[in-house]
Image (cartoon, rainbow, N blue to C red):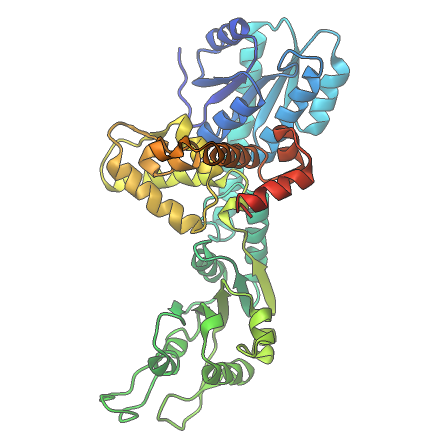
Length: 453
């Protein structure tokens, strides 16, 4: 009997004969396999397993046990909720207990009884599914902050918990992060989790000409200017009782900064061409990709406005620093776009997973979303490759004949090696240098020369 589950079983075993035996004895579960640390991490990111069986002694070398612990540590970093069952030698109880202290679910001594292993895996699945259901119910009973946000990165999860706490207050919030990191999603989540009954209204301060921005924000009275044939509410008034998001607030012109400061202090506005003060109850969320303190030093942003906006400051990590999220988000976007297009949901090929991990994501989640939409459209099979993503150049030198120059070929090879080392070590410079067999200062010099910083 083959029990199909949403999250598969990952079998990590370097002995291929034993790997096949384990897969056969656990055939009731949908499973994938790996034979070393790198392939285990790759398969984990590709399939997001719920349960892992793992040989602590891999690969077979003099420091095999430490490799097993390294693998365990990496998998638990990717998803602390995963249930890892470690397989150890008969006289290896100390290492088994150490694995349990690190976060493993259970351990079994070799040779493993297939029935006992199957029962242990089944219990691990039940516990995993119970905990997942419990989290889902807690989120339903609490807030919808996480709606539309897909992450397993600890840093991004801390951001979500912070937003959830802030939602209970009326504090003004400043969201800082690169373009495309999900600032509007978080602002919407903040509003949804609050008790505010009004609307969530967002305006991009950089997308509206300066001459129109004041009337867009504050509204205007009839006859205030040519073409003003009737009184019109501005975004601030429209958001009364709700939440106003001022995106790219770092681009707000200085005259409007003064008016916004007065509104934040007094909580009243005057429409353009009007004299009546209108009281407003709205939570303001500012957002920008710019360094506001640098703009203050340049005289381009008011310091007093900054401190009015920065009652709560939330720093959103870029996608390249979010552990495991590029592949996780790629799966989510592939499912969404395939469903919208009424196509079979494609899987990610191994080269696509490696390319997603290696790419630096200058456009962050927005870039990834656009890339996956194009890939779902262009993929010829039910599988997305690195070529479909347009990322093959991140992994392989171009086959162009002009690359016969040895210096260029060497630089391409060095660039590829550094990118893959950083991807495999999640950007850890010390571990990446060790993987490359060079010192950390040498790695810094290499990255500067290759313009990878």
